[in-house]
Image 1 (cartoon, rainbow, N blue to C red):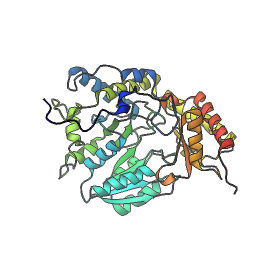
Image 2: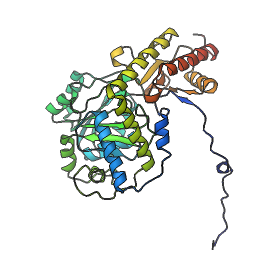
Image 3: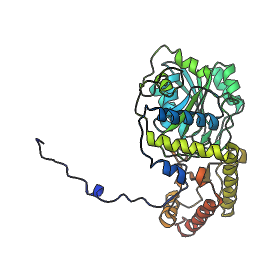
Image 4: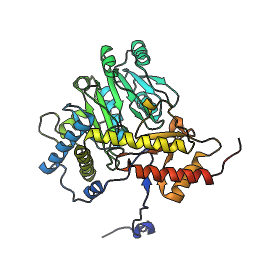
Length: 392
């Protein structure tokens, strides 16, 4: 029998049915879910340590190896967003005092700097203005000067729309006895990345971008070189939850009996499994081509409206997230709000160093269609006609 009276009453809002708007998500992620992925989210839960769940986890690992193009045995899912995967990489590889070289040409490099500093690493940012990328020569100068154990690069910088070239960087890092860590959150599934052939030691991505799964899980893989660094560290990682030795065992990566570590997000893993299955059925190269063609169509439609693409070099444009320079005289918030309020389409402004400079339009996975390009460009046309414009 209760010994106290309730002070907090049932919230009135929770006594009403859940209502979700029918909205087209054309920002930098998450993206709308394919029907098959939504259906997976409605399946009954099973035990996290059952043989059936282990089978699903093993299938997910094979799917990650496919989209990453790697044979690394140490490949698994982190129960958390891609921020969690970045933190898992850094907390396991870096020890206090380690030298860490960071390509900071957008918000994700800035986040890597922040996490590295919190861990006590000696962090060396290579800072560039939004829209910049890194050459092999620039990185080699940083490697020679700072002698880092780890280099961070963002393959697809969703805050600026830049696609960072990766060929040659793994080989360069290894000549300087440095590991290469790459953020591919908004690029995997949407543009080519070859983890093994490009010499990437640690690659991570998110579930909710071109892979079209719900947010909340992330994908990560480690080379043998990275595993050796992590397994020979002198200190324990600061995080138990993100300790790769524990996670590797739980995900069946070490050929040892699996031990409980944490309760995994079972329903989210069903959806992730189905998202990887859809890409496997479609074919990775077909997925890359679909995103490339949809982006090219979008670029043409935007330029026909008189809008300017923020990334000038077509070879450096990210096909999954396009950045448009905010047109002169307009407030980007007015444009974003108009498109949402009148068309139920979500696009976004800039993020971090690109705030106020760009509009961001995402064509991710299921949403990468010519029909969606037509819808968003018509919405933008109307916004430019009706939003207030200051005289220059």
